[in-house]
Length: 240
Image 1 (spheres, one colour):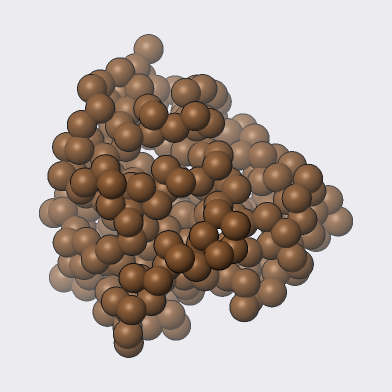
Image 2 (cartoon, one colour):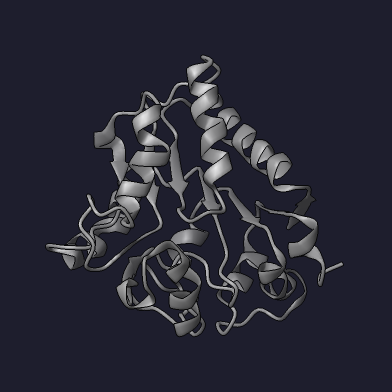
């Protein structure tokens, strides 16, 4: 596992360059995408690179990690809305090639077929991850089996509290989500993870220095053959 340290601007730019390189080397590649505040600058860099003609996403397929149960794709806190607003609406990607788990309707059937869809697309070539303060990746909370595939997850109280900053009130935060499982994530050929801020320091310490345990979901990444952790000084402070 490789670690790259820098401020948010630097590591976001470096991750964006990883994506640009991947797409330029394999124009019909499959990208695994994340939401939340961590990848925002990465996506802004990709939008600018597309506008500058440095990269084209017209043949790319994407699969997002997760979605809140109960939110329509038009809700401003749904992850479909997030992806459209921060990336898809501003690049030359075919929206039919962008896959985000459903939060309403027959979301269980779609979730049960999600790993098959990824496999049919050729598997994820490059996956970006954020990390929760308790070490969760996607919505795989502590205790999630390492062999889990896409499933419905009950959100931990700490996750609900962390995510409440994006809602008007904590009571509005969904308590369940559909998420790619830990095995789903580990199936990606290459993984990059971004973490910034002191509140991520314990999770990064456990990821890099702690034992591999289902109580710390991110620790499964210790077994991935091509995983790079991008952190700022605050997030890396306990792992030095």
